[in-house]
Image 1 (cartoon, rainbow, N blue to C red):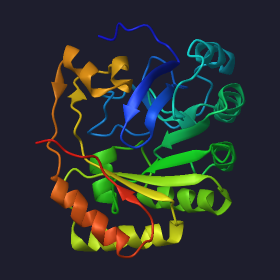
Image 2 (cartoon, one colour):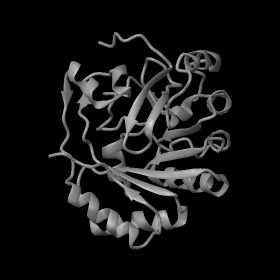
Image 3 (spheres, one colour):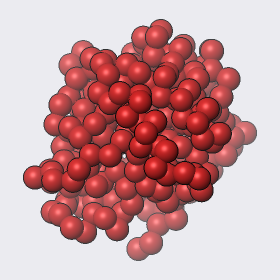
Length: 263
């Protein structure tokens, strides 16, 4: 059972992608997401939906942020207990954090709500946005991300491309590999990326175990995962990540990064 008292700001978290990152959780103690990914570091999602509302008031987050002064960090990221774009005060939170801390503020999103113009407008305030794309066909999408009903991969790509047309910040695409991709899947993925023109690609593989139940502590670093039951997923090899990176970079002139794996 989850016993940790909820705090809307957590960390700093050591991230191979973002450096020393202070997390903002706009969702709250009950994990809520439009996905229920098989590898989710939070465990099984407790409430799966795609309805926006205010989960944590902006003023509560501001007060929690003040407790971390003087913000000896690289960036601030909105992520936490689910899909951050579900928070109806997303734009308020981003703006408040930028003004209060003077740090770059980013959002880690699964892109499921990018078909909503208000979400695109609020997300465009962020200094950087990282969008999760783990699949290039619907069968793969349904099996890995387990989205809410009627959400398709085509809708994700369409919303993402609409967002890209207006976004002037730093866009990264995050892709989790649970197994090596087929040749045609790699080609299709690279074709989409050519249209998006992101500033960075982040390839990942499940090096962190998945809690058997929702764990709020799992928002933080890997070492915290030792205190409760978990299920480990088999990562792909570093060679698979390297080969995919090289193939992407042969077509796109953008950085492609992946974590160093220890076997």
